[in-house]
Amino acid sequence: MMGSCLRVSLSSALHALPAPLPLPIPPDLLCPRCPFRDEILAVCVFLFLTHCMCGRVRRALPTSHTTRRLLPLLFLFPRLGTDTRTRGPRSSPVHPLPLQPPSSPLPFPPMPAAAAAAAASSVGQRLAQLVQRFDVIESGLKHVQQQLRHGAPGGAAAGAASSDASLCRASSTAKAPGNLPALQPDPKDPLEVARLRRHCVDSGLHSTEFLWVPSNYYQENLQWRRDALRAPTIRHLCKTVLMENTHCTNKDCAERNNSRYYLVVYQYVDRFNSDMVGRAIQELNPGMGKKKFNFRLADPAEAEKLTGVRSGAVAPFGTAIPIPVIVSIGITKLAPPTFYVGGGHVDCKCRLDAAEFIRVSNAIVAPISVPLTDEELEQIAD
Image (cartoon, rainbow, N blue to C red; front, side, top):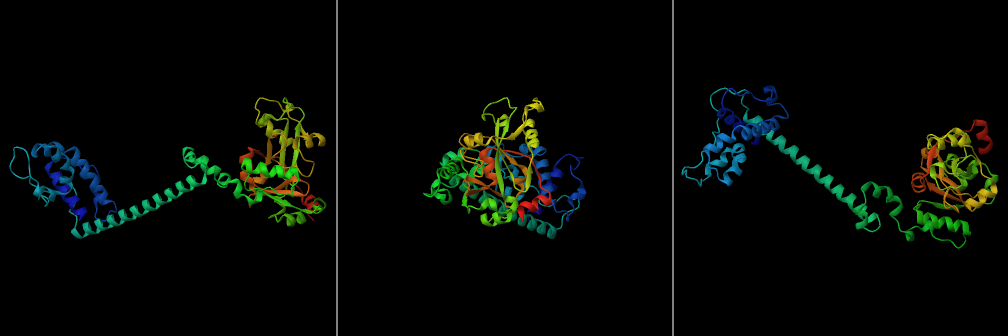
């Protein structure tokens, strides 16, 4: 029915305009089988009647404020004008636009009544589907807002932060320290492990889990260690070493991109390459020559002083002084995305979420190792 009204109104409007007046759309688009016929007709009605007929209609109708607001409705639905009463000097009612098209030919053939009814029904169905889709989208947005509001601390304060920052903090701030049983103090923990647990709670490493292993852990192969930790594969087993840039212009670890010391994390199935570490740090310092970067393993006594633990127990976080971290790019490709490192004691290991650790520690991710050969891998795995 809507399509029929639009067509009749358009026909009346076209014959009220001075000829010749070209139609601004191709006539073949107005074919009754065109799926966008109703939309095209609606655009034509607004275009012609709003921009071309306003002057003519205003001269024929009273110029009261109410009448001017009803002009679009009179164009689209001519029957609305049959009961309109005027308030101006004219005493006769406003005559509606003719419902039947004049006898003169139009630029397009008349639309059959059945086709118009079917088109109107199709448009109604599409509109109903759009309404349902928007309802679903609105409901989903409200659900996301509720999660962000209740997930971040402070409620209203979280709303002031950006949505990207809220999503990044969701995994680490959604839980309060009291809701992290794996990180609660354990009376059996040595001082070093207890300090690391507390660091995880304070820094946001809430996915960390500490695991105790037998004292013969380092005497066994990688398969045995994997089973002891219940790790997915031997590729998830990693180690942390302290590297020193002996040619560094700095004497401390205050500058992340040019620190004298770095904690380097890589997989047991790879071979560590100090030259690759030097190239990775040199890329962060454009303009500095290659001779300024010479990495080697730090002196054991100095390493124990800086990390606070002895060899075999080094964790890539919670050190005695803050030390920048370099993570091998291979760790970011693990599935599932977790890895195992030292946990502050030679018999304690910890499982870390890769993305969470890199984000919290602001680690440098770079290619710093190469895979072991099959023969080398067999020696440590079997």
